[in-house]
Image (cartoon, rainbow, N blue to C red; front, side):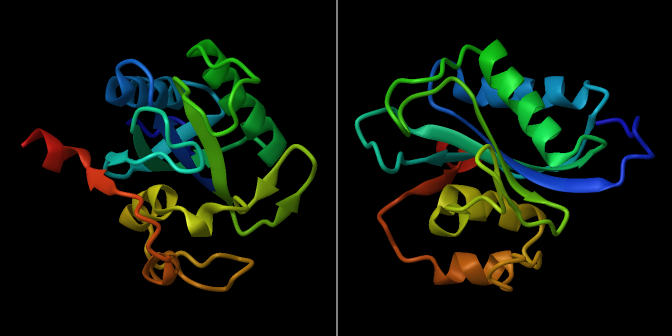
Length: 175
């Protein structure tokens, strides 16, 4: 992806997921479309993973990944951009919490900021419980330190309690 935004100094890590339709293609297209906005430049993308659903099990498996981005948008503005993409890709608010969705973006980290507002909590409040978030971010930045827990992503992943959530690299399923 092109380096078209050299002056953007904010670094964020976002997660992406989908479990409806052409999941892998949707995630890849949404990331490419996001990279084409003026406010976001994608620096790196993790491997893609097939992941077992959590919380609400009666739904198809997800495809998940993470991206390291540079952005000129403040955290709230970045959230608005990501939510607009979810809507453009067919996500409808309401419905089953943690249920099926064509596209899901979350801000996991934004610089070293700790944000706690009714609209946004960063670092993501449940990331440390989710292999489908930790493993892709570990692909990108295993030594990144969580600003609340003061632990690396690698350590959080190592400490993750087995919850029978499978997280399988896409290429291992397509070989």
